[in-house]
Image (cartoon, rainbow, N blue to C red; front, top):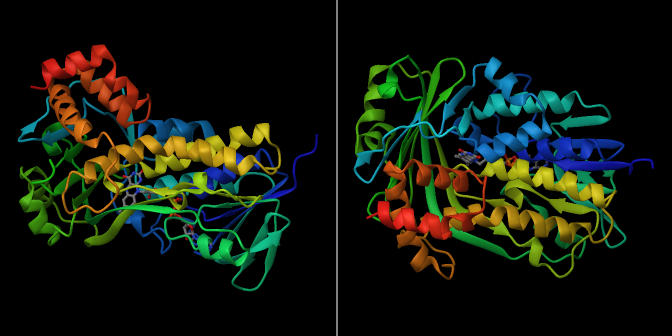
Length: 430
Ligand SMILES: Cc1cc2nc3c(=O)[nH]c(=O)nc-3n(C[C@H](O)[C@H](O)[C@H](O)COP(=O)(O)OP(=O)(O)OC[C@H]3O[C@@H](n4cnc5c(N)ncnc54)[C@H](O)[C@@H]3O)c2cc1C
C-alpha cells in the first residue's frame, strides 16, 4: 500500500523533532516548520530559551530517544556526554543529610540541551523526504472537511497537509487557530508554582563535588523552596542551576548561599564561570485536555509541551515528548494517514503517558500552601507516604531502585503500593 501523502510538524524543538522522526516512516513527505532560524551548531536560540538551563533526561526518555534514533546514546557519549548511575554517581542532599551513594544500574545520560537538540536535528535533517523550513512562523490552520487541512505561514504561504502535528511548545497559539476554524479549545488545567531558574556554566575538574558526577540538593516543602542542581556537560563543564518556587529566588550567588549545604556555592567560588547568569521564569504547569473534548478536528494532533508542560525542576518534559512521538508512530501504524477517530485514540494514549508525571510533579508542588491548582483526591494520604518512601530510599537499595524506576517512568506508580514495597517503606521510613 502506498504511504499517505504529507504531514506537517509545527516546531522543531525536542517534541517536534521526535514527532517528525515518527512521521517520516509513515508519510511520503514530512515538513517541519519552525519560526526560528535554526543554528548549524549546538546553541541556544530564541524559541527555546530553556536550553540555557540544566536539563536532566529521564531514563525512559533516553530509551525512547534511542528507539527513535538508534545509536544516539553512543553518538552523544562520543561527543562528551556523561553516563552516570542515578544512585551511585548522583549526590543527593535532602532533609538535612547527604544520601549514601550505591550503584543501582540505572544510568542517566547527561548532556547539554543544545547538543541533544542539535544531534537529533542533524539526524532528522538527514531523513529522506523530510524538509525543515527554518525561519517560517505558522500563523493559522487551513480548513478541511471536519478538521484541519494544513497550515498558513505568516508570509501568507499555504502548506496543505493530511496531518498537522502541533509541537510549538507551552505557549502554542493553537486554541486561537482552532477557534478560527470553529473548533472549541480544550479545557486547560494549571498548577501555579512560579518557578524561577538562575544558571551558569563552569569548568569541571576531576574530584569536584566530592567525586560525584552530578548533584541534586532537593528541598522539602513547605519550609524549603530552593533546589540546587549540577549536571556534567560535554566539554568538561558543569551546568549549575539554582531554582526557586513562589518567587523565592534572589541573585544567583545569594540563592546558592541559601541552600542548606555549601557544596554548589563552593564549586562556583573555586572556578571562573564560562557564561553569564541566565534567568528563566516558569509560572505554571499546564495541561490541555484535548482528551476530554467532545468534538475533535480530524487531520490535527498536538504533542509535547503544547499538550502538557510540567514544572521543569522534575525533568519530565523531554521524556514525555519522546514517549508522545513513539505513541504517534504506534497508533499511525493502526490508522494509516490519521483518519477520523485517530486523534481521540492518540490523545487518550498521551494523556495516559503524561498522567503519572503530572501527578508527581503537581502533587509535590501542591505541598506549598501558596500553590494554586486543583488538589487531587487522595493527595492527603499520598504525601506522607512519599515522605516515608524518600526516607526509606536513603538506606534501602531496593526502595531506592523502585522509587527511581517509578520517577524515571520505567514502571507504573502503582508498584509503590504493592504489599512488599509498603512494608519496606514503613519499616525504613520511620
Ligand atoms: C527552565 C527549564 C528547564 C527545563 N529542564 C528540563 C529538564 O531538566 N528535563 C526535561 O526533560 N525537560 C526540561 N524542561 C522542559 C523541556 O525543555 C521541554 O519539555 C521539552 O524540550 C519539549 O518541549 P517542546 O519541543 O514541546 O517545546 P519547545 O521546546 O518550546 O519547542 C517549541 C518549538 O516551536 C517553535 N515555534 C513556536 N511557535 C511557532 C510557530 N507559530 N510557528 C513555527 N514554530 C513555532 C519554537 O521556535 C520552538 O522551536 C525544562 C524547561 C524549562 C523552561
